[in-house]
Length: 311
Image (tube, rainbow, N blue to C red; front, side, top):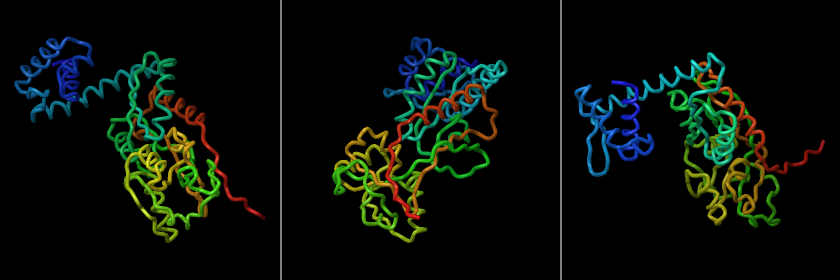
């Protein structure tokens, strides 16, 4: 048994196909099959059931897959640690991004990697903040951006950006038809049928918690997990939404929408950078965290009108 065989086996298991794995690994399919058969022979176990649609893990294969992923991750960390002793940003890093940030940051981050980190590899995964936090704890993700994360001993959390939440309406829904309308007191929010994400979404939790504190009952018209789909539905007139100004900017449809700041009390979502509290940051992780901060600070954020306070 050797590391190359384990790597080949993991690729086949993850992709469910020898042909797909051979394409990704850039090796001939017969050579890949021979390596996996040699592994089965060495372990005296059938690891994969081959069928017309691809391959499926046996019980023994599932056990080996769990061990193999952990072994390969530890080897990758070993290589990173050796590079860290030379203070070089090398190795592989997995970054978790919420969808609203992924659309804005993925291409600039990849461009920065291509220019600045030729000896490093980057993987980006998207998910809800709760999922990204769990992935950081389990080691699947090295660092991530989270909206309104709860304090956790396994995470080291640093606030980066405070984004205002706003009521999002189709352009022309207000009398002015402008991109920004007058601020909306939270107590008036029940007058608007809302299209909201599911309860695992950070913004859904935030607005429901604040509504409960204010003593109002929200009019939930539709529940849709995808923020881009929510924006499409708002543009089509199916309802209104409560989103961050960044999500509106990232949608690509800001010109079709009117946004109104939520006030009394104002609502905002805090974007944070999160890493494992139990892992020493590598030079690569420090470099990527610094670059993410710079990219976020450079994002165009629309300004919302706020009520004028008279003294």
